Image (cartoon, rainbow, N blue to C red; front, side, top):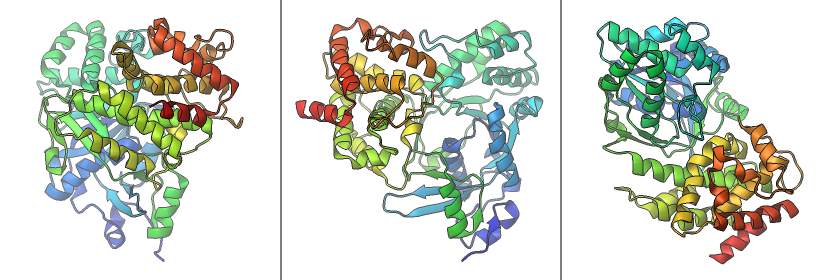
Length: 497
């Protein structure tokens, strides 16, 4: 039994006898990357890749400074500060093996509420070459109906009048870029790592929309000088649980208040467009390509949509985790049927990827019994996810006379989920969605107006005008309302194919 040791820089030598710890000089690292939105995914993905690069090549220029723009980021700031910005990564393999590694690439963290000027100064300093983002779909501040920048946001209104008092990511980026331009420093690259199609293009469009109202001259400089590479990121990273914290303490004697759990699979595809240099991430397995779009579309339409298929149907069935869904043969068969019959036919060719092998790997990853990714996490913010992951596939299949039954059942089930917020056994489901009220109000009228849910144009566009879809949707949603026997309806669709 190990004695318990707090995770701190001074204890790394002692901990190195128990787990893998950073061997590079963390004190010598300069902040080359400022990352906004330090959650579990960033720590399991970009921070991990950067750590492995440091381990193998000891490049002092690429330390990461985390930034939190929400009061809710205070907890991660406090934990990281207490641990000298170290954290433990638990890589859980399907066979039960757990790789445990202390990650050292994060070297600082600033909370904008405490030090707004500190955030601007850190981005504006000469060493900062990249500002990266994991701010979720909602952080990009676009209208989901039009795809345009939402100027009605009160924080944006404030920033337009007070450019030196930023509140949103765009306010901070513009303030820092203004300082760099005035100091005649090269612009940093802005690199989105969020699950949004064409994430770099979207970030560029939103920032320039904002800047054209706030400062047209700076907007012109940004347009010319700042690169916004599109990226595709992938690693399943469930929410940290008390069991993860206890495992570290009981197995290795490590006291880490916020470790991260993830699967072994990891992927990062980036367009090689940078304003001011970049780490040699290709040395640690990152793919640099001219156009990330086919990879991104493949991942969103297969992995992310596959997750949503399992999550929404699983929630109504009563499954709590994604691996539990995959242990149910009907769910596993239905998910693969969706990938093969509906998602794959509308994908572009992806160079260097065997699509069948990729889908096989998704089945293995989703079924990993040691990840236990919660259905509630996968279902959270479905109003932001489904219009990107699932609905485009449905619309393309309607246009091509392709298969639509799988996706239509998911949308019918989502209606019931948003209305009733209970599973088939009447047990409550917690719905986490910024548009929860709007979704509920549209769904609750289904018994009176069967198409009321899909009249939500901000989510479904003009789908309610398509008679082939509405006919199938009406049939399925009424069946679910009469009897929420999801697995029975899944079986029917499987047998039709």
